[in-house]
Length: 163
Picture 1: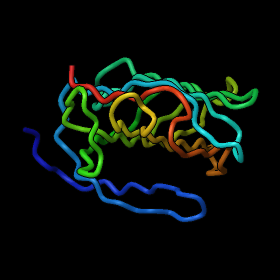
Picture 2: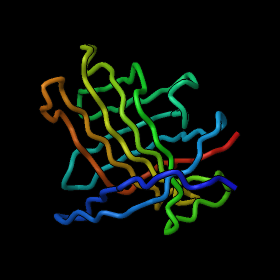
Picture 3: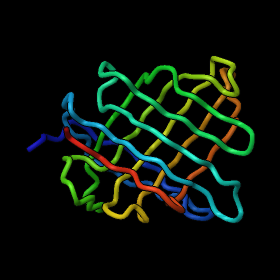
């Protein structure tokens, strides 16, 4: 059993309202991984296609995050911070991983130009993935938001694993 270390604040955008919940952070192991791909967005927002394999420890490599929207893309070069949490309101079975939420930051390239940042939250709400949720924000080095999207996956799956 993993012990609680801290609290991660998770902001979930629902329509125009922001719901803030607290999820207990869990102790990380070298085997903690979240992987997934899918489409995020609604008919009101442009579709964003995401694919990722991210470790629960920035020292464990490789880490990959690719985000595509319209003719734009972001490619993660370095994962700089990551926290995993077990939100008691999410039941990610199967399989049991000890966590269901990942929050992280990284730096990478936007349209092949370096120096951009990504912040993300991914949740695994079980199979087949229709209740998995994602939030991604890409910013320039000056803090300007390039792209931000949140929502349940329109298709795809996100999977928390302890391998």
